Image (cartoon, rainbow, N blue to C red; front, side, top):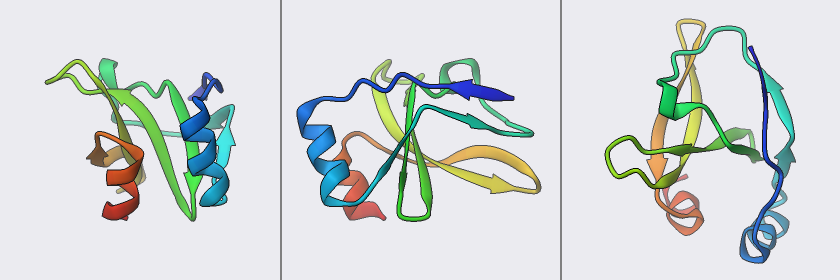
Length: 91
């Protein structure tokens, strides 16, 4: 599965990425995923060695930042953060 992402970010988000040496991704190939329809990533970046995606939270209908993980050869999201500051503290 090849996923293409929106690469438009706010000034605040770009500042966070620069401060933390994040890599903005325009696309990624994932072999097997376990995403719900609402979990298809809109935007994605690499923070250290971790891939972070912006997805829709199906409970709140708000966008959240989610950590992409791999378990038993299937990609899924394992942790969710409502903002980049919470993500920074959680990782």
